[in-house]
Image (cartoon, rainbow, N blue to C red):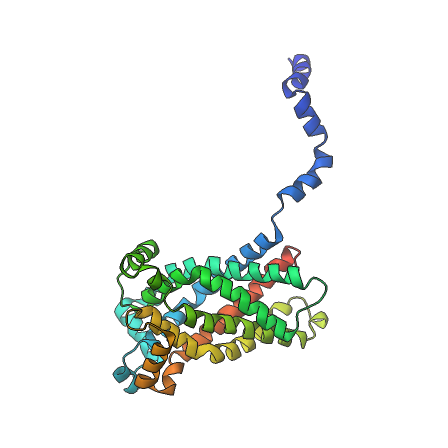
Length: 317
C-alpha cells in the first residue's frame, strides 16, 4: 500500500546510508578529485592511444625498412632492391597482409613504449619546468632521457619485432618468441643491440623534440583558427622528423644487424666494421627512405594526437 511503503522506505535505507545520500552533493567534488586519473597516467593513456594509431598506419614502412637493411650485398648492388620493388615482392609472395607482418610485436612495443615516453616526459616537465618552458638544449635532454627510459623497458619486444619483420624467424607469438630467445640466447639475446638502440632512439627523440618545439615557437599559433593548429603542428612534426631521422639512420642500421645476428656481432664496433666492409658508407643509410617516411609520419601523428588529447583533458603537454 502507498502509505505503508512510505513508512518502510526510511527504515530500509538506514541512518548511515541516508547520511551518505543526503551529503552526496557536498561530497561529490571531493570524491571526483579522489577518483580522478593522475595527470601522469593521463599522459600515459594519451601517448598509448597516439602510438596505437601511428603504429597501425605505418607498420608497412617499418617492415620494408627492415627488409632493405638486411638484403644481401649482391642483391643490393643489382639495383633491384628499391623500396617499390620490395613492396610488390612482399605483396606477391606474402599477400597485402604481409606488409603488416610483425604488427603484433610492434603493438606490444609501441603502445606501452609511447605511453612510457610521453608520461616520463610529462613528469620531468612538471618536476623541473613548472614556471618556464625548456630551452632548445633542455628539450634535447628531456627527449633523449624519456626515450632512453622507454627504450630500455621495451628492448626485448623490439628484438622480437625486428626478427618478425625480417622474415627469417618462425615465431608463433610474441610470448613464444621471448621465451625462445631467453632459452637459446639468454638475457644477452633479449637485450641485443642495446647500445645501438640507445644511440639511435635517444638522439632521435632529443633532436626531434628540439626542432619540433623550436619550429612551433616560430609559428603564430595564437592567431590561427583552432581547427588549423593540429595541421600546423603536424607540419612542424614532419620537418623535425626528417632532420632527426637522417641524423640517426646509421645507428638504426647497426641496431638491426645486431638484433638479427647477436651471435655474429659481440659488440657495436664489430657491426660497424661489418657494414662498412660489405656495403661501404652507403650501407649505413640502407633503408633510409622507408625509415624516414615512417619515423617522420609516426612521430608527427603521435605528437599531434597526444597534444590534442591532452588539451581535451585540460593538461599542458
